[in-house]
Image 1 (tube, rainbow over the protein chains, first blue to last red):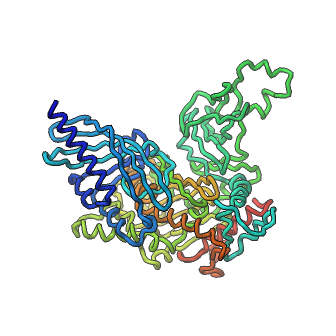
Image 2: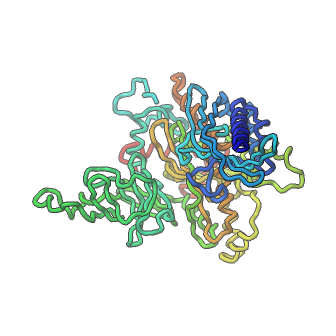
Image 3: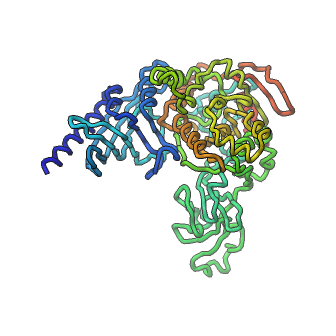
Length: 160
Length: 442
């Protein structure tokens, strides 16, 4: 029981830390949380089985995340002027399957975003596939299932 | 959303809003113009409804809209498809609430009137209650109403709410060949919609999106932060000898030079239709898939395959509602909602008989370019939004379409050509717009 509590605490702290890096726009530090080959995935259909044979809102590997980060710093991106600000709230954290150092964590999120006189919100479920590295975790895959993923959705530029 | 504040008379002279080389800002901002467009363009000409592969089996339906009219594409047991107004003949409720599905019959949720997939009334609870009334159970008013016209061109279903439209093939004219080329790229000669749909809400007038498709002066400016950045990051991150990832092959050409886009060229036809590219496009340099080429040659022979692949178009516009990219098998469909609100649907197609890598590339393309959360589209969307806001200014009522005015080249009867950076596509669309909007023209 104590071990479970400790793991749950460590996992929760990791998810909160990850969300905080997004909100504080510390993009390189955020991207460094991913394992080699790690993926970010926001499906476009509830229950979507895979990101390869079906369109997604975002499906990115390390290279594409780095392109997005470099774009954030570009003076030539009209949709990022003004730049959006976000608050990611992560809750209902539950550890699902775990095997050796691999574990899958389910949570709920609410991302509130403000840009140019307009505040809006995105909500849904996160699934984090993590590798337990002892002192921290690495992300194999972060999946953000929006409750309204099939849209219609307006433009968004930052990660859910 | 604002109403035009000026001294225009209550009955608008819409034809005066378009001149051969410029267009009045109110075509984008005035809700009255939008309402007229629904009536005179969207409820009158051929509008894309869906693809036949979305309703393969009897009982399948797909719910969408033609302008402001909710409609259903259905498949009947007789093997035919039908385009029906999504309205119960009884009290008017939508007959289906989901976007797609398969049913035994169309049964109204309210009083249980039942209809077949061609719209014919099947049954009414306590039917004898209508005896000796003016309601004729066997008359047309007891059935669901059908769109006045519905035709398929090689699987692409268009419908018109007006009986006066010319037949679909005639109306498609010079852009039918873009559908041909997309279908011909399938070894089995058939396409299938698959891979889901992206529904991207644009907070702007529908025409900004349609105009942008063959606007070849914008990519190198608006997409610098994604395309140019992708080139730089890929160069830095990947070893020099590594193969170029598909994602980079897709994003990088958006910042090709002005001369590259000029050479693609723009073709314009009647009814506002047109395409850019032809011999080459931003899709021309994707890596080959040897197994696909093999299957194509087995199906068509080497010579014919070369002919098919020699056509490489960028965007084809079936004005006003549909746009395809035949070379990458994707389609974007325009669903106007209000003067400053539009939904753009993005679809992908499987080339039947081709390896799945082709479909996966189409899907990757849509993720990267057409999704609401992608690296490219939000910069287009932001530009349209700023146009929507900027055109509220009263300081200058006119939007220019002067570039290369007077230089359009008629290369065949009704087939005009301009270099990529020409405003020919805008002028052509507004020529059709003016004709549609002047009452009586179709």
